Amino acid sequence: MRSQEFDKCDKIILTELQKNAHQPVAGLAAKAGLSASSCHRRVKLLEAAGTIRGYTANLSRAALGLVNEFFVEVSLSAQTEEAFERFEKAVQRVPEIVECHLMSGQFD
Image 1 (cartoon, rainbow, N blue to C red):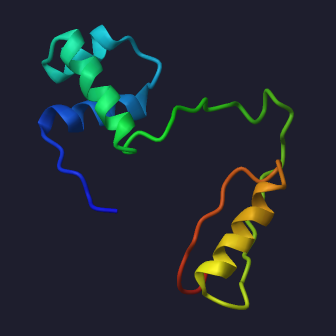
Image 2 (cartoon, rainbow, N blue to C red; image 1 turned 135 degrees about the vertical axis):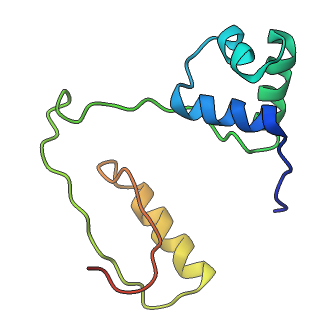
């Protein structure tokens, strides 16, 4: 996938949406120096291009009664696309796993 070019307004929109994806378009537009309709159009284009993949809620672990958080190192027997896909599918079947990261090198 080819990298997309972003102008100053796009960068402001993306930065602000990362801070608060639930903010009104009018406020987002004001921060980017755009009209509300122009800002809305840009957000829709960023969504259509796959730059914005979706919106999520940042939940309080304590409020949900989730007191433990674990980081687990997993080593795959092969570093192939097929192995990664199998691992990803297996992880997706476990609802308690909320994040996975591919890292290189040794952990500290």
